[in-house]
Image 1: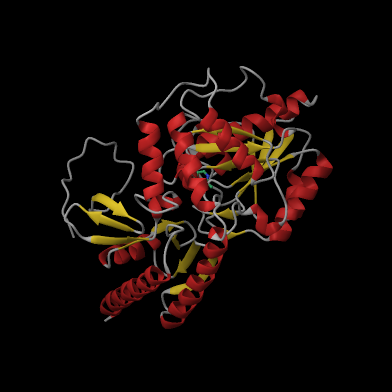
Image 2: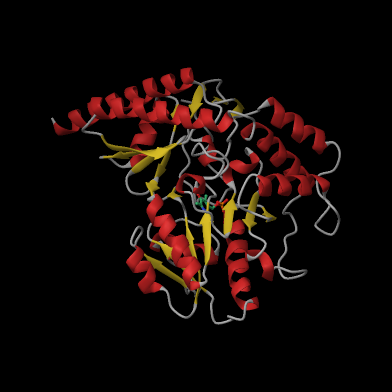
Length: 402
Ligand SMILES: *Cc1c(COP(=O)(O)O)cnc(C)c1O
């Protein structure tokens, strides 16, 4: 493995692996030392169409030589086109563009509260969220996520978030009070460990929100834009939210995000009420449109669903070969989790030694999130490397026991 300079001027909030990458092609990253790594993490579900996709490079360089940024004070044809395409492909009527997942969630929370306010319910501002959730790292979104490890030391938790167990509709009903404005949920928990949410539970939330006049917000920052084999994961459950956030894969690696909504849900966001300097820049919008060209091409999502199924079958066989290590295979499409009997960071490190990139998550899970353009041959290669990583870990465990 390449050795990289360790004295760093970057704030040390990440325990970085000791490898640096110089360039990428499709599902592969090439290290500064010239070694090829199979990228089954996709930069945490971000490089959805692989590295240096010719269509993405063309869109970026073409727009890059025209204009990058104009602010939101002027018309933006590329952004209009992108918003229209997102609306046409989903439940949504309107889109607010932002720059990160957390920022899209902030927009969603503000939109929901403002909708209640403008609808004559200024007292409704609280948002129900679920245990194990992750919604970002801003002050409000760490309060929404409710995880102690992200809240600790950052002062009083932002007011207005109530957390309940995942999957319990009675607990949801019981937690709703006169101040509740909305319910916020990931259709599959990502950082929480690819924890699946039953379709019946999502349908139950829809029914509760309709009956009690609450807004249903789906955080599809990780599950969106084809990751699960549908454009957005809510399609699997057959229910639509009032508001949805998308980020990670939407720009194929370019930082951008979006908050999608029905016209009714967005009613409160009128001129001057919310804003962003960077959100929806022509450069971001051109790249976003290029992502959609690929992901919404006929047959693309069906292929993701098929490959996901194939991959999970191969992983089930892997689990049978390594039952002492792998407890469960779960996921949808190309969002896959392996629940392990060892710490996921240790397993990801073992995979890295096999030149395979994976992403640790909560609940003792390692996430496998290949670019959506992955081939069958690359999946087979990934399985080979996973097998080798399992064998290496088992050998190390056997040595430790003896
Ligand atoms: C990654 C993630 C976020 C936060 O996105 P950032 O771009 O890091 O702010 C929010 N919600 C979910 C479900 C995520 O996976």
